[in-house]
Image (tube, rainbow, N blue to C red):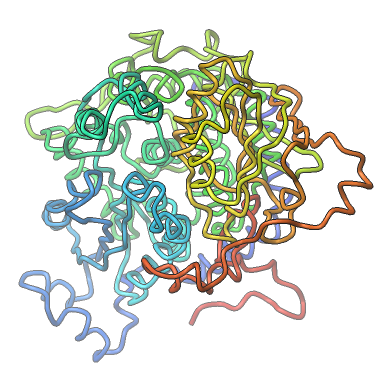
Amino acid sequence: MSTSASQTPVHPVVAEVTDRIARRSAATRAAYLARTDAAMVKGPARGRLACANLAHGFAAADEPVKSGLKSGRKPNVAIVSSYNDMLSAHQPFRDVPEVLKKSIVRAGGLAQFAGGVPAMCDGITQGRAGMELSLFSRDLIAMSTAVALSHDMFDAAMMLGVCDKIVPGLLIGALSFGHLPTVFVPAGPMTSGLPNGEKARVRQLYAEGKVGREELLEAESASYHSKGTCTFYGTANSNQMLMEVMGLHLPDATFANPDTPLRAALDRAAGARAVAITHAGGEPTPVGHLVDEKAIVNACVALLATGGSTNHTMHLVAIAAAAGITLTWDDLSDLSAAVPLLTRIYPNGSADINHFVAAGGTPFLVHTLLKHGYLHDDVLTVSGRGLWRHTREARLDGDQVTWEEGPKSSLDTDVLRAADQPFAPDGGLRMLSGRLGRAVIKTSAVKPEHRVVTAPAMVFDDQADFLAAFAEGRLDGRDLVAVVRYQGPAANGMPELHKLMPALGVLQDRGQRVAVVTDGRMSGASGKVPAAIHVTPESALGGPLARVRDGDLVTVDADAGVLEVELPDAEFQRREATGRAPHDVEWAGTGRELFAGFRAIVGTAETGASVIRPLPAPTEEAPVVQPV
């Protein structure tokens, strides 16, 4: 059994899940590492290029970079960025590439901006046609990352990204170049604005018609008010937490606010570190070796211990597959039963991510999880071997960043707690199964008295139909399970359905027993209403939600892990499917028709909802093909 830096044995469930993932993945992981290792070279990668190829690669470079690239001695670092100046989370990256280039040159390397990737905002596209591109954008970003790295000019890479699909896409793309050391550079969260509880209150008042659009916009603008990531603990901040605990960020780099001296110093240090972990730098750390079974389990544990985004039940599966590792929902469920919930950050509490940082942040979180055996310490990170490095806090010494011993106790136990004094004994993420399929439910924000609901179904094929029924009063005065179907990846790209939650919250607050069952997504903003999401098989592919009718008694039982319809099995199986997924003619406009091919080949939510197919393990008939 592996041990942490303090010799704490790894928790038996964490050890068992890690071991079974490794055994299950042995053949595919070995094949992935064989391809990765075959692509490695000791000298600068561009030395393998013919003269004409290389000349194209530095034709536009300024001196002294052009001379350096021509000489073939210094390592060259690729910079890939999700910058755009509309989105608050990505706008801070505008000047970062030049900062990185200077720090890389000072560290003895060279750098080129290799490419940009698209970055869309789920907050802007909620309830709009553009949201139907959101999940597919992850795999597009992975492909864009691969295109940026495809020139074979590079000895390391730096990935600049923050939000929902962007970071998983960047990592999946980077893992296709697993021989390259890769450092992820976050932008940090915006400073605190309107408290999250007040924002949620105004949203519910608007849903009830008690305040108008002007009041709602004022509240939203006071909440989302400046540069940086949104401050609630959704997919964006979950992304950042996972990258740090996987060892892809510098220690304590994750939640430093934009436009601060500490943020700038961390960016400079990241550039220098990218050079250090190349072969020329003396500490070669290929990302394909760093992201191993232990790193994947560490990411799962961090997600569960912080009540993170349900999107990662798909993203982590897809990331693992890109590294030749098979992660399943059952692995996540078993870990969730053992890993305690240590944070209360909105929507699981009233605090925002800046309050979490003030309470001790990631350094204390990693410390307490290591101390109690929930994380593997014996892992590679971009800072060296050992996750204990991420128990240290980043501090400024002049204009340089240094790391000091981090806190050993929480500074605010209403926000962050030690692993032996948790908010809950489990991670609040559970799997449901039954005749309606398999689903994910996030319980960390759902009060115990609301976690089991049995009520008549009200069936909707579009979230707009549900919202119309709410506005017309047809949902008033009754218990119900809203079945919102034909929202899976093959139907319409699996949009997030956040606009359902204020209305459902109103009904719950009125004393009605309510829940939602959907093959769509809710993401990190899943809140106080029980939501069985990511139902698979999805309705568009003949899943059982297509046979549910209004009035059927449906049970969502988060305690027992049950998702069931109260009908004789023979009767339910005989039923014809009703409703339908959008036709291609309806799934057009706002760029959606460009992704029709993705809908045709996308995998299930349980296998990562990806259009990228992991390579199978080699056989005697089809051995591993080594790169030239």
